[in-house]
Image (cartoon, rainbow, N blue to C red; front, top):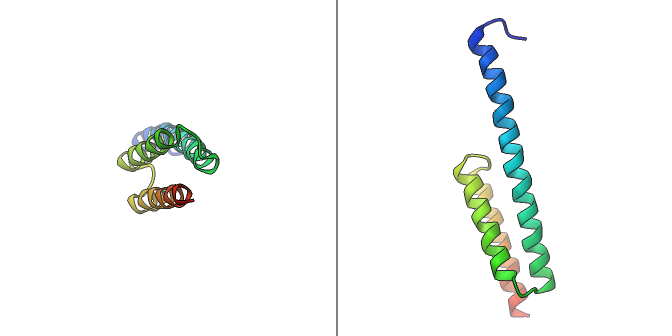
Length: 88
């Protein structure tokens, strides 16, 4: 444990930030899985699921939870799968 007051505060802040980031990442994974399932099953709400997933990815990127290149890669791969499924 740190002895300096500011470092004690940083430990508490780091725990809060980690929990906040974990919630965002967990939600992100859930939304992406739902979009992937909608793409695979060619569901009627496929476009809405993809839009929600892209929105969640952009939100996580803007909050600094994921890197911008990771966000771009996830969006690109999802769009590529959706276009491939639509072509069939």
